[in-house]
Amino acid sequence: MSNCAIVGINWGDEGKGRMVDLLTQSYDVVVRYQGGGNAGHTVVNEKGKFALHLLPSGIFRDGVVNVLGNGVALDCENLWIEIEDIRSKGVSITPENLKISDRASLLLPWHRDLDALEEARLKDKKYGSTKQGIAPFYSDKYQKKTIMAGELLYPERMQAHLADILEWKNLILNRVYGAEPYTMDQIMAWLNDFGEKIKPFICDTGAFLRNAQSEGKSILFEAQLGSLRDLDYGIYPMTTSSNAIAAYAPVGSGLPSAPMDQVIGVVKAYSSCVGEGPFTCEWFGEEAEKLREAGGEYGAKTGRPRRVGPIDIVATRYGVQCQGATDIALTKLDVLSYLDEIPICAHYTLDGKQTEDFPFPAVLGDAQPVWETMPGWKCDISGIRKWEDLPVAARNYVEYVEQQIGCHITYVSVGPERDSIILR
Ligand code: GDP
Figure 1: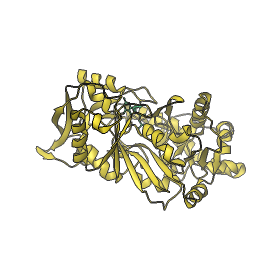
Figure 2: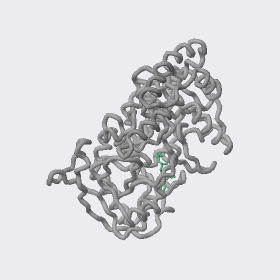
Figure 3: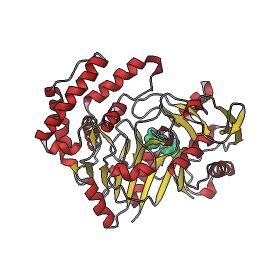
Figure 4: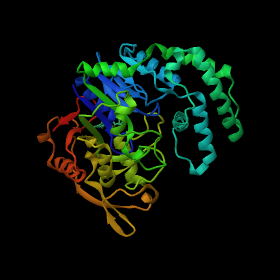
């Protein structure tokens, strides 16, 4: 029996899906514990190439039970589209291998509307939202103004609860934003369509997980996004609206007292960032374009070009600390093979002084990168599977990062495929 969280150390898109897909071979249950369908976990395995948005990445493994925990933003419409899409590629998804927490709150159509309306109101000060309704959803959850998935099982009570919420929500839609109000018929039609479709998957996943735990099953907890987008510890307000850190895994999964035996932090061998906000190590122009091309850095959900730059030691060290990582998986080392020299954002300067500490969000935009370089290896490493077979320059780079961030790099990934991995 063991509990392991797989989390992002940086801004997201570190390759968490790829690591969960690999490691699920040793786990019985995989739980997504926070975030919504705005994720894009890319998984490449013998069944094909997939971009998972809300479904846990254990969905491809026979015998693994996947859970959407109470901490997720449950958008029935997009989840159903995703289930149909993955099924059409030959993957079986049934109430046996997918369980949705009855305590997960529902992301409703007006959350997406409000996300778009607020981004439009903000104009050039927008947050760069994926407009999937995540921020309005979590605001409503904490205001106790949405419904839980389990309420779908009690239609009459749900309808009465929804009528109260609708009245309040229409005031905001109409009087704050001047948008069309919703009718009860509209929202019930949506729930009768998509809510009904996911109903067979809804159950008391807390009871299921407690049972799994008492039977000695191994549980993997999967995060969306990374430390720097965590609501409390990230670059607020350019964060997501939930807690992506491992400490939240027990709360958002349905096993509030579960200790984590292992926290695997996923770090990319360089940096990428989707959306707005300070990004100290950012590259621009031709060198950014080359790195973006080499790494295929375009959003899995939106197709947006990601902002890119060299690895950021200051941000990564902070991310490791926030997560309490016990191990690191360093991904996409192969992408750096084209470079003569490997650039590193080794420190920051702030107010004319060098700093190793990640600055407070309000002044992060003033921080300047201090660059260092290490020799490149200039050869294809994607076929290498043993640490000692990596070129010395590549090993030196991994060891340097490890020493700087203060956590053992246990996995080095050299390609997107399941087996393109070096275990140290
Ligand atoms: P996630 O949201 O953290 O799962 O990350 P994404 O799926 O958004 O981004 C990771 C991307 O990198 C995906 O396209 C993966 O297939 C790909 N990938 C993951 N690990 C490696 C690797 O070691 N090398 C290469 N070349 N690609 C990788």
